[in-house]
Amino acid sequence: MTKHLSTRSQPEAEKPRLSNPDACPDRCRRDVAVPRESVAAILAPITTELMAHAPFTMLGTLTGVVIMVAFVLLGVPRTISVALFWSLHPLHVLLSALVTTAMFTLHSRRTLLGTVVVGYVGSVGIATLSDCIIPYLAEALLDLPNRGIHLGFIEKWWLVNPLAAGGILLGCLWPRTRLAHAGHVLLSTWASLFHMTMALGDGFGILGYLALTVFLFLAVWVPCCTSDIVFPLLFREKGSRMSPTQLPGVP
Image (cartoon, rainbow, N blue to C red; front, side, top):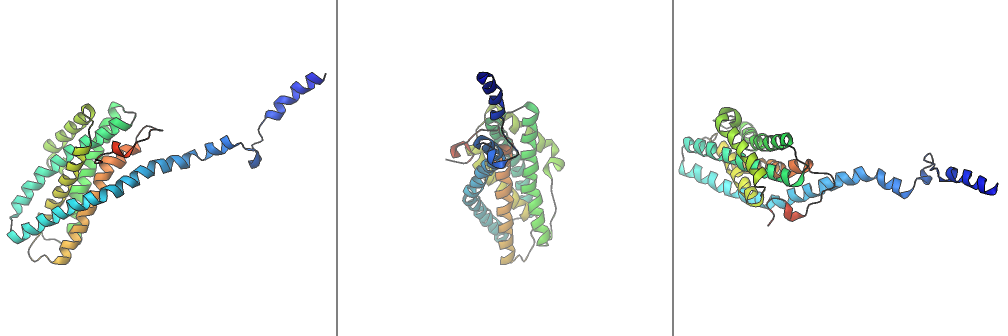
């Protein structure tokens, strides 16, 4: 009888009392903390990369300022800015699609539909924000005489969209990111710059140049890093860990 009673009381002793917080085992508490750790694991590399790319973006911004001042001093006609913008913006979309798709291919559980959506939105959408929308906001706030918004995927749909598709295909077949990201940042800087120089008029003062410098930096730093780093990493496979050398632009 003693043996029979012990076998009946054993299951009752093993039942966890979840109503009492102190009775929750350590494993249970660790499971509760997993979502918080997952968010931190996602944000940590994103924050690190944004800060790491800020100096390089500033360097690209300075090259843009030098070009802008030279254009004004030399009286370069507006048609040159128009031609340069419509040359650099499509190339920016191509490289952005390549880097975004490559990052998604390397670090995510990919599907064909997911790759196309991430590659297109991450390149055309964010390149439009960087090259067209943010520069136009600067032009409107500074009341530039020739301001205007130019949406490449609509105005030059026959050029921009095929290049985006080519970048997506290339990113799937040849997922490389380092040199493409560096070129992407410079192309974005100059495309945003020439969108602004198209709107310039006479008598532009030093405060205007300083304001355009700030907008030029923001137009490149946030969208480019969002396109190449943040956007693809948000869709990476759960549990994957990446060293800094796996991210674009890291030597």
